[in-house]
Each structure stands twice: as C-alpha cells, then as structure tokens.
Length: 190
Image 1 (cartoon, rainbow, N blue to C red):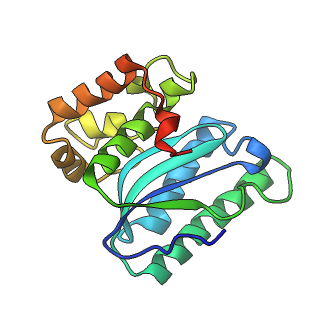
Image 2: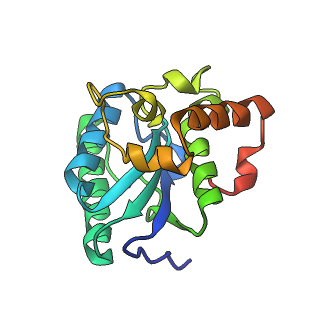
C-alpha cells in the first residue's frame, strides 16, 4: 500500500494502533509522555485540530504547516522516541505500532468537522469513558475551556471553533452525533 504524501497547507487524519491491536499506552504517564513528545517534535510543523489517545490507538486531525520532508521526519522521530521509551519502561522489544502511521488527506470542510467530532467522541463510542466530554486525553476539553491552563496539548482552538462557527455549535454538533448514535465507523476513519 502506497502511503499518502503529506503536503504543506493540507489537512490530514493521522492514526495508528498497536501491533496486533495491542496496547500502546498502559498508563496515564505513557499518554502524558506521548503528548510531550508531540509538542517537542511537531510544534511549528503542524497545527493540531483534534487528538485522542486510546489504550491501543490514537487519532489526530492536523494541518501541515511545514514542508513534507520535515513533517514526515518529525513524525518518525516522535514515534521512534515513544516506542523506545515505552519498550524500555515495559521491558519489551520489537515494534510497538503497526507499520507506518496512516494518513488520510481531508478534502472538504464537512469531512473535517465530522473527523473532529469522531476523534473527540472516540472514548465514549468505544465504551472507554461514559462521557467523552470528561475524557482527559482528547482535545474536547481543550477546545471548550477559556484558557490553556493545565492543558496537556495545545490545539488550534480558534481555527476549530471557526470550522463550527462558534463554541455553542461545536458542543451541539458533538452531542447530536452521540444522541443519534451514528455509526461513526461508516466514516471509514479507523
């Protein structure tokens, strides 16, 4: 399978899971470390619109703001650094992630909005958390709070809110997706 080329100024869904569907995060400490590595390796290279860290997979909606080679290398450095630290911490060897990280180029605003909702509601959808609004390792809280105090991962909050017109519509559309119990897998995002 040929990987989608990452192009500057374009939007992407970035995701992957653990090898054989196994865990990539075993603790909150693992998730916080992964978020610190995202800041370290991806700051000023991509804008993060949404993210969610589940025990065996992750999702990000990003906009690329640097040239392809720098961004691709930064993602590689991020995943390699995390896998090495995870393997050392958990006394394991070998690959942590399934092959290369997956990426889907986002072609329209409607799909991008649905992707952001899908990412933010992922914990509730998968039954990990009864209320996606309170899940600590997604971008939902970061988007709706007034300040960035104690935020684990800064996101392009203003851009996200503008995509939904305002914060009220952002919250409403997230709730509607969950109330309607839509089959989010039909969006072909996993």
